[in-house]
Length: 185
Image (cartoon, rainbow, N blue to C red; front, side, top):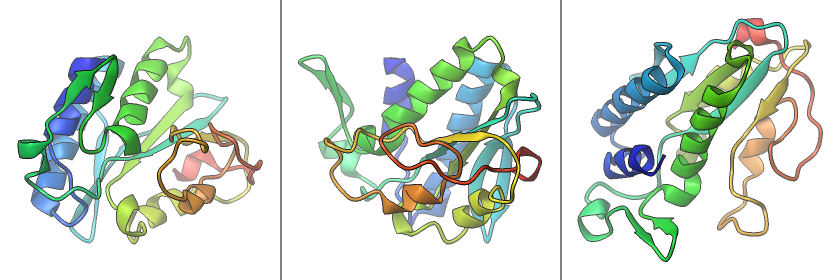
């Protein structure tokens, strides 16, 4: 798990660098394939890649994550991934690469991983101009849950109001949201 997190952190994915974002999505796709045995789809919207692995089960769950960070390219040169006193640190660890890795390992441990649709956007830090289209088309009535593996509210460093766009149930403290239609994910 730590090796996967280190790979994601050291592959910098600043929101404004599409070249790096494509590299990050390729790395993430390989990780998804290795852990889940499935090849995710790369969905490109206005030149920006997003990653999607569609579930096919009858008890649908959407896991919504993001890969982009607020950290500019070159940050890992002065602040590389490390584990200090049992705590992983580095650009993007907290928001949200650690949650993404944990989600992948959790999905891999499920007895029914085919129930899960994974959507990883790459523009959350800049307001989700293209990722919102990928996630908001899951909002029509249907049945299912949505999980956003974000840091706990009491320890997060910034407001997560955008997370409320995720439909279903939140993985952290939050209101019950309308159901989503997995066939439109």
